[in-house]
Length: 445
Image 1 (tube, rainbow, N blue to C red):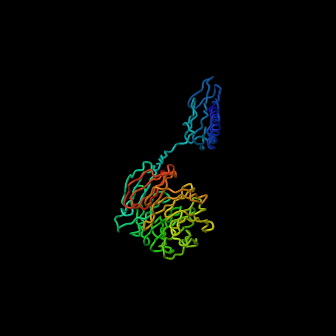
Image 2: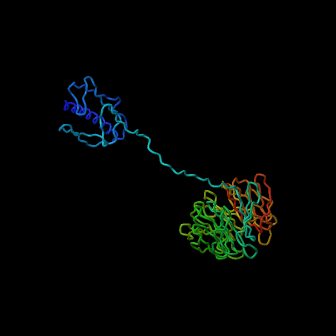
Image 3: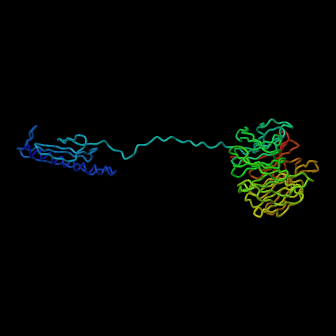
């Protein structure tokens, strides 16, 4: 009887192992589910003679082993022996004892993976900036700041020592990323780099004698400076703020302008009247900083400033010696037309939409101009479209981003005059520093 009961126990163990093993295999494949929907019950009804060593079974007693559908954690091989008869099979690694009314339960396994703490990244939006005009005052050595919305001077900051004979600020431009202002000082032969955010001086770069106009490539990686009395153009690496090379050009270079595609630099020359010059614009190749071409102009030329249309197909050049504005076909690199009806043409800008060119009629050295004007040229027709009055000694010029107002420096009157193009008149005059020479407007952001 003891041997028979042992066989019964062995059968129960085998059933448990088979069911548990199947569930275990399912776990190994990553599919956690119940392989047994109901709890199977194995019922053994022994004869009255069958008993165990540790006790006896009464007639009619049922021996039941409950098998749950939850599998054991891991499986190993165990050997069970009973009265010299050995049975080898897979059972759980932890001791598993199937006794009467025992149940096998495992900890609940969650299908959701544990979460990791992720550091929150806070993106700070750049500080907004109102549309602002920056004016350099030649003999003050200062920059005056004008809020375009209110048309009020908000601050004036000294960037050099200042004073007649000490400094002579000439031209100002802004870097393409709107982070820096570049200012030439023709008295100290330097380019001053100013941080837009707080108007602090970043550095001063020594260039040639009497630097005038300057320009950057659209990428902002290079800065070109026309050195009037050195007959050279300095090429500055803006990442290191050092002069990378110096290019020899014609007599008295007055301005440099980068083409919209950033491949060429046009160099104009303002030689004194009565002194022969080569009557041309030189073209510098940005790739290797060498002079590759030239554009012949009229005689006498005395070219002053060049501006490009936004698409780069046309360039306009002010030719003081002939009192005309020349039109250049940039694909041919050739002067194709001259626009007349103007006097003492000087500084120029082009509207952001490329439809108009604005030309300053500057007071000349002997003050022969009775009334200075601003001329407007229609880019499409290449004709003089309008003449604006209300100026005395205009020099620098800039246009608001909506193309509605001109800001003009009045060099001899220490003023800024604001001309409303819709109202066709000067609508405001702002007192400024000593001898304002140039101006640039930076759009709001």
